[in-house]
Image (tube, rainbow, N blue to C red; front, side):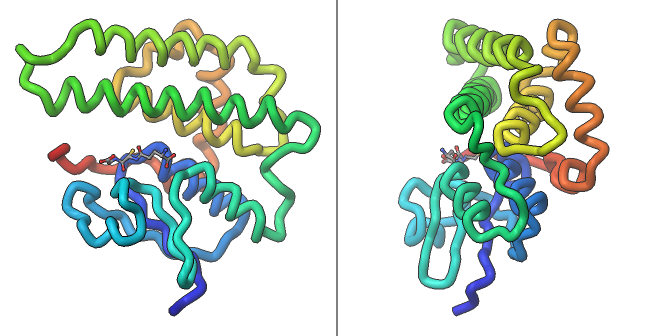
Length: 204
Ligand SMILES: N[C@@H](CCC(=O)N[C@@H](CS)C(=O)NCC(=O)O)C(=O)O
């Protein structure tokens, strides 16, 4: 069995994008397969939650984007993307970014997969509030976590913001000008451009 990591990813998954960007930044040789998660029963053997991203390395499976990013960092010869001097702040920023992604995914499912008259307006409002409040929180911490050395919290925030633009809208930029300008600049890099979300599969 090949020891080149195989990343099962989705075309729009922000969690998968975070791993793919981390792999590119850390110069990890890997293969990537974009799958339709709703039609990928084969994945259950590796990940009973049937979720992307899932990483296969030889006989080993690594699930969850945070574990996959940590694994890539552990085998990379490049400088670590986990900053020693503000490790816990970084981990917290990753969790908040994950929360934005989770709420955006839940909102998307509620608004795209459920008939309009059965959608729960209150839930949609809660998802949106959590997303926008988190983005504002990150904007307020901008000067603490953005530096020239690209770290995993920055990668996570960037993926969460782009996913918000994809699934909700990009109005968040109006109240969060530092993040907006930063993301525009970051997106000039190939690791961001080459991982922009593609066409989503229908939720089923
Ligand atoms: N905590 C997981 C979340 C992954 C996740 O929610 N993936 C979504 C795609 S964005 C998925 O596979 N959804 C299919 C499902 O849960 O049925 C991670 O960080 O990897």
